[in-house]
Image (cartoon, rainbow, N blue to C red; front, side, top):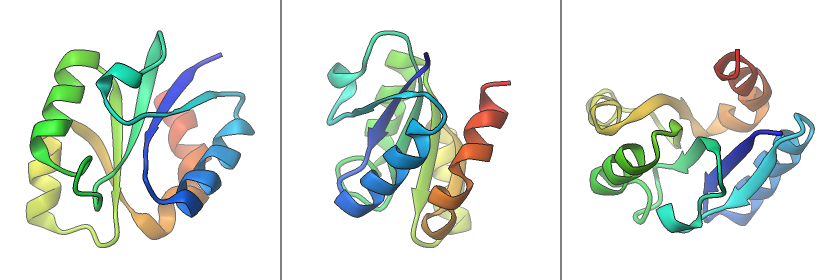
Length: 112
């Protein structure tokens, strides 16, 4: 079973994502920092609108220390910010409105 870490503070969004990910038989961990990651974690989902998680330093540290495939989501994807997040280590940046409804296909594509 694969492990996935959610860096999400929004309770409703976190619940929605975890319910959809549970259908894929994934172990889900709500993480606050890099030290909360489960063993053999492969994917991290980050709320880029959150001040704690959506900053370049946090993303760079997470990517460099863990090597996770990082999926970020934000309310409105802006080109300049998208480029910055990609440079910091986000593999994918998705609009907040579509993250939950497309998460199964995104995860399936990553795990191929």
